[in-house]
Image 1 (tube, rainbow, N blue to C red):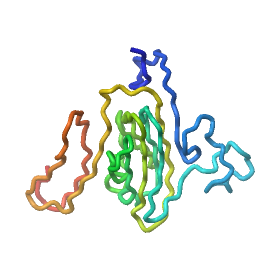
Image 2 (cartoon, rainbow, N blue to C red; image 1 turned 120 degrees about the horizontal axis):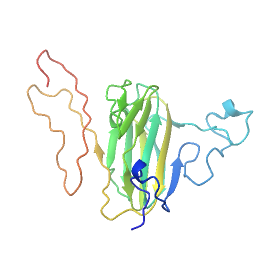
Image 3 (cartoon, rainbow, N blue to C red; image 1 turned 60 degrees about the horizontal axis):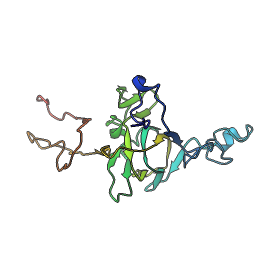
Image 4 (tube, rainbow, N blue to C red; image 1 turned 90 degrees about the horizontal axis):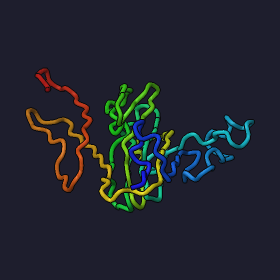
Length: 228
């Protein structure tokens, strides 16, 4: 079977495929080939007013209070390879990331941005892993491979009462997806406060075949006893 470009790593870097890589950002909302940095107008146009076309004039999107914006809407088949995002602190719990696969009505991913990137306390926490990296300067990076067959749609909802600026980039591959490739799911849960000595259920109600790949937990200690 010909290599489809998914699961690329140093061990198979020499293999050639017909996969096409694309990137979506505020500079190129569709990910179309050769269309990055083509805009003549944008929220940062004044900073690049003397540079001409080809310079970044739309490095971010503005999300109004209560509004939901579409970050990416991709026709498949293919797979998301990386999501990069950053925004001001103090809004990470009030900004909700949702991802929909193949025209689903309900999201397969629904989580505050901070918690999705393992920063549940509205403050920077260094994360260095294969799947998620959070670097100084509030740079959120996700490297989970997320395959889809027909369509992938990413949205961001602003639940706060202030306008927010969101910088982001979605890198993906257009290629054939194996029939046994699973969909990525992520869910946010919170109990505040958790009743004393009550067992907290991390996950339930999950059916079907798949892999449990992990949990990020932010735990606040509200008593003097042992919490672990």
